[in-house]
Image (tube, rainbow, N blue to C red):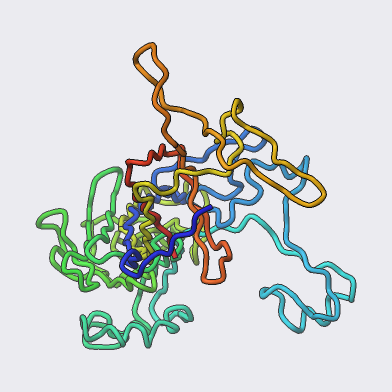
Length: 390
């Protein structure tokens, strides 16, 4: 084994940004994530054991039949440490469980987008929690303001879409948000954050009612879309967006995403022939450390691998009661081939298969393995590039 110190100018730290594309399509009360249908498994009709449009957070209980084997679940035994799950209140932990009882949870856990629709004057706890955040961004656009001449978000009709961060990473990439509103497959409205300032401007169809108007705002880092555009996207037609046949309304951005899990409880077939498409790119920044490890010419051409010594020249060491003597020279295995019917010249050849990284105390902190061993001759210089995501 040979140790080589990595010099400061051989270490680089940078940041890699990934922009995963995300698409949600909503139709008749079902949400589809990145156009993925429900996938059946060998033992279950739903491979991931989560609803369509949901992302399995830990991928536990994949293709597991509950009736035959049961589902994996987390549990904690109540003891003197008083350890419990965060979802169990202190009162419940003290009164509902005795010492020795098991406190259990459930798997799988999943995430998907959520919709909350608020009518005029309706209590809106989740939106109220965003008051300070919205006011903070008002320097970017006045449409963020919780209360202004453009509207009062504390009591006006409003449509709130929540996107968990597992779908986009650090933030939603500015300029990539696009919402499409369809009726029977015909596009009746499109909004985009074309100015990259959080304003969702209606850009289509060309010349449609509300074209060029701001229908809402996007909180890029927090993962929320707030829609306030109340103008009609159709003329003379009302639809059952409120799940109340006696109270039908005209299509508008307030009803975008009807059928997404949330405050409205829809049954199959109760929604009008509307479908909704949500597109955006995520922005996930990962710090990366890059090392350069050099195998210089004339170095790293010896090996402790027993096969490095030719079997024909190997001699056991001389051992007696007073000494241990190894032979000074044993011929290495010659792996050089010749195109002619002659014995090829002898060359010390090694194959580098892995590189270990050590700290200053010579403790192994990482191992970089090559997909296949690299041939190292005495005349060859090699440099290995090692990348570590932090």
